Image (cartoon, rainbow, N blue to C red; front, top):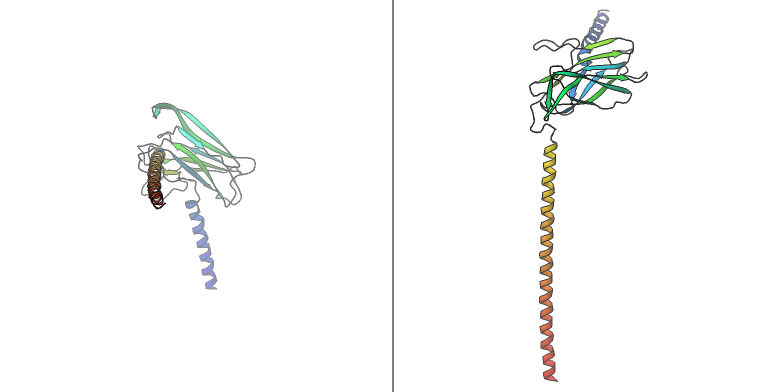
Amino acid sequence: MKMSRIAAAGTVAASAVLVLSAPAFAHVSVSPEGTAAKGGYATVNFKVPNEMDDASTNKLEVSFPADHPLASVMTQPVAGWTAKVTKSKLDKPLEIHGEKIDEAVTKVTWTADGKGGIEPGTFQKFPVSMGQLPEDADELVFKAVQTYDNKEVVRWIEPQQKGQEEPEHPAPVLPLTAASDDHHGGAADDTEADAEDGKNENAAADAESSDSSDTTARVLGIVGIVVGAAGVAFGVLAGRRRVNG
């Protein structure tokens, strides 16, 4: 009897741990594909899990940081979803690649088409290309609002405080890495490498052509010597025949 009670208590405790720990891994998050370097451009994924058993997520709103505005934001098509990008005027224009930008993206909204959405026990990624990333920040904090088809709304907007436990509904945070020499993700390096490869290939072709010419000249020279020697031998033999005759 005591063992049964102990087992039951253990089961309840384990269930409680699972319930309490669920928000820790079921929140909306953002992560880069590769790295997100300061001053560059990056493709990131907003990952949205469904943490309900009887409803599907049918809408996601992501607010972009106002203290570090991003002028370029492009969404990748996601099957079954429609994306809307909202821009707003900036109080202080940005200067990117010598051009002044007076507006930036403030929000992206994804809405499920029809009765689709993120069903219970599943998650969905929403890819976004963004830039130019700030050079004076170590991270970007986004605010996400997740809406379910039963009208329930979960706001992932709470900031993470240093030295404290993760809040119940933390805002998605994108860490930024050190700035790279090429803000376009190595495209210039690839171009230089291709050019260098082209030079090497041309040099190799020239060398091969030169070797081929040298070889041809040598062969012709040897043929000439052989033909000349044959002519001399023929002349000697002809002279002997005349003498004997």
